[in-house]
Image (cartoon, rainbow, N blue to C red; front, side, top):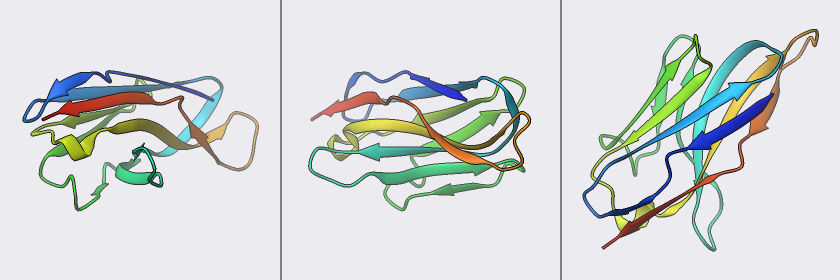
Length: 120
């Protein structure tokens, strides 16, 4: 299973960005998809997640500003980021919990990351 992120960029505070992450490969089922971020000198943290029934979860720091969504037909997850703040600056990583074809269990997969920089 391969994850490819896109959409990271440099944006001014108050602006918006939309991140995309497409999963490909021999996928039997994707159970959940999520976005994490890691700022310099800090631990990687969960930003938002979405499971197969569409239920979502957000970090307190982004709730009300970010929206996670998922296109099951395309195995793609999106993160719409609005009202961006300098403290949102980080490398954003896509994660999915997926069961590959012909394998009886699910695994966690990570993308390579995409840089989001918010200038003040």
